[in-house]
Image 1 (cartoon, rainbow, N blue to C red):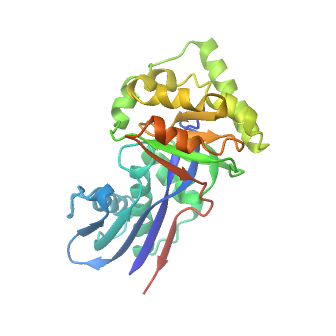
Image 2 (spheres, rainbow, N blue to C red):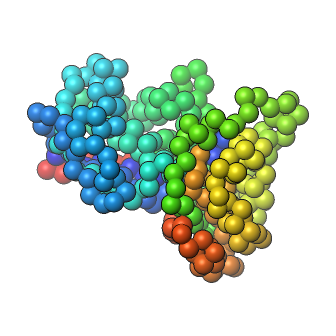
Length: 293
């Protein structure tokens, strides 16, 4: 039997569209052993509605990766728990994708390198900003080009971090649908410059500057914020007490608070009582896959 644990992620960090992300201390945690047929046992309300047979996302992806990597297909008996809400922009599908590949890597005795793993995952996702942080841990700037993922690890953010999780989903396909098909050159240059300086500010741990840039996205937040009914309320509460951005495709709103405002989470809970407000931190370990017996 083996255990696989994969941290959640928040992607984009505002203007770092499809290229910036960080791993969070919320986890998908599974134990698995070989079996004659697929079976999933789900612990916790977050994943209670998922199927228990071969139609499960992980079963489908394991079978897919087996075919792609020339591994004889196999079935598993899986016990699975997760504190990552589904379809909220915290990388729930990315963590399941990573777990699937790690299961194939282990049972197929492939011994794939980290670089090969991130290449495969980025190819599957089309971008690295959620899967690479969840795999390797930390804050990541990355790009996927010519079937290769290049990435750099940035310092973990040590300011207070919160997630505001609304009670409603926002499907990635719906969030993608509202984006423009193109940007004017001048607007694209401006958006790219903001993202570039954000990376530099994070590298220097200049969170005052990074916070100002996180709220100046031109790529996606002007279009997606209207889909999240609690966005403007959260923005009003945070104001100059920190910065906020849409986590991934949403609906979760990520908040980086200034250290001197120690009650920001309480204010968010008070103004958004129907949302779950959780204090989080950067996971710097990444995914683990280990034999437990």
